[in-house]
Structures are given as C-alpha cells and as structure tokens.
Image (cartoon, rainbow, N blue to C red; front, top):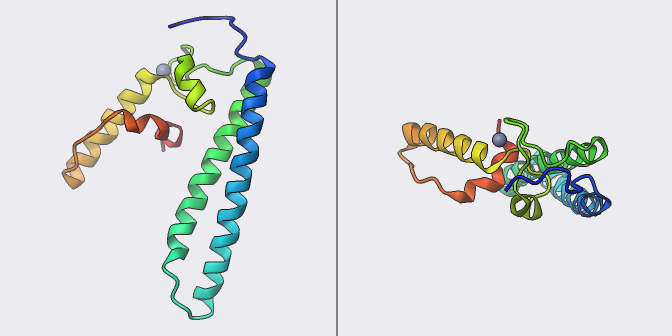
Length: 140
Ligand SMILES: [Zn+2]
C-alpha cells in the first residue's frame, strides 16, 4: 500500500482540501449562528434544549475545520498524507474518504481499541468497529 513520491502534494489534493475547507467553514458558521440564537433564548429565560447540542456540534465542526487547515498546511510542505503517529503514508482509500486524516489505519485501529476498552470499562459498551476511523482526527 505504500507509494512514495506519487504526487500527494499535488494541486489535486490542494483543490480537494480547499473545497472541503470552504464547506467546513460554512458548517461552522451556520452552527455557530444557530447556537448563538439558541443561547440568546436561554439568556432571555426561554428554555432551549438545542443550545447544548448545537454547541457540541459547533465544537466538532471547528475541530474538523482545524484538521482541514492543518492538512492544507501539510500539502504546502509535502508532509500531506503521512501518519502523525508513525510516519507511514496513509492509504489512498482513507485519504480519498477523509483527506484531513491525521493517522494511518493501523494507528486509528489501536486508538479505537484503546478508546473502546476505556469506554467498556466505564459504560460496559465494548463494541468497536471500523466506524471509529472517521473520528480519529478528533482524538484527544
Ligand atoms: Zn500510523
């Protein structure tokens, strides 16, 4: 799966990332505006259960925007597509689905497993799967 020097810093990735960046920015803007509207209701004494949910979604969207900005920066320095944990090139199929990915599939699986074990220890929820791949960028 390793293909080095195959043009990962090419204008094609830059264009893809720029399009995603614009979409993320729009998402952050919309969620932030919606949150502030809901938060204003709360301040005015009107109970709005959406405020907390909107805040959570806005924070997640900001994280995705930051990830996309980081990936754009990496395209400029030719570091794009390398795992931040182990340094191998991230599989093309993963980058195609999420070009802002920070980690390779191996490191994501390890992190997902560790997170799953931690979750299982506290909540009894032990099922982990490949669905965790998309959230690896938000590892904290
Ligand atoms: Zn890795």
